[in-house]
Figure 1 (cartoon, rainbow, N blue to C red):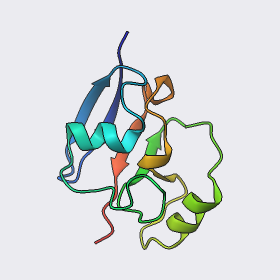
Figure 2 (figure 1 turned 180 degrees about the horizontal axis):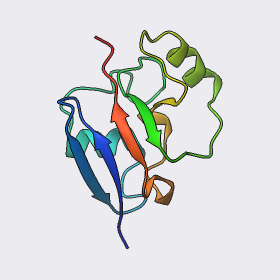
Figure 3 (figure 1 turned 90 degrees about the vertical axis):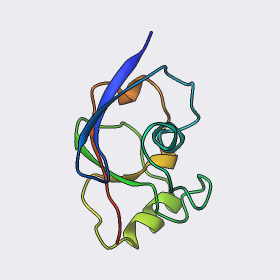
Figure 4 (figure 1 turned 60 degrees about the horizontal axis):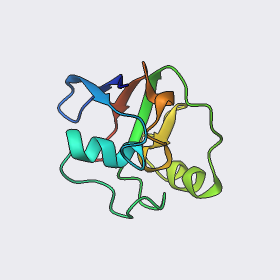
Length: 105
């Protein structure tokens, strides 16, 4: 069974990403494979913020851990729904979400 979510990429274009749950370790790796060339400098440790995304609609029911909070708080374009894609499991919780990739430059 496959699922899908929509994302605004770095060119400000909407993409629909279809995926099989748990095929990828996290959303960062899934997006790296499908639409982004360079991100994830810290290899998924929630330290660098290069995989910064915003949840446009929907929600991911997981509390942010201390490393993710610390990294997000240091980013210049933090929003109330900012997350690090490396900290989000690539499973059925993504189905139907609308996300935006936030570049910090």
